[in-house]
Length: 118
Image (tube, rainbow, N blue to C red; front, top):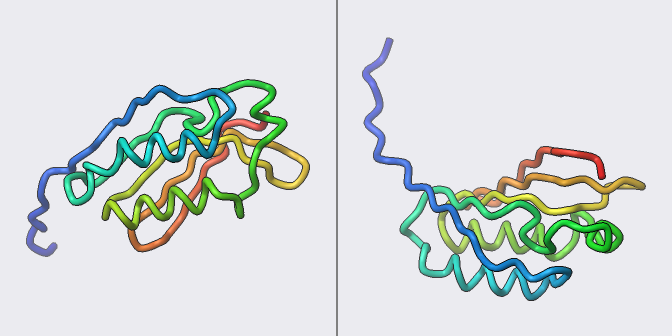
């Protein structure tokens, strides 16, 4: 067994904003402004549930795909902040829509977990 690795504290930032219903672009801008001061100050950013739209049937009807602007946005935020960024969005995959938790790392890796088929 090797020597223990010294690690610093894990800096976690919980971000709660005033999510604007059915306004993904506006919400991305809103949360980007809230995240900006965290650059270099946190290791993990946790965004609210369905942070780009709020939760409603109308949002489900307008769900983006994995190639949409919100997935690109969360990757860009992780890179800009130098931190992992996670939050859930309603995403269309094939014929279904999922409440998908995204996990983006500063090096561009993206993982996801489908919390629920909507």
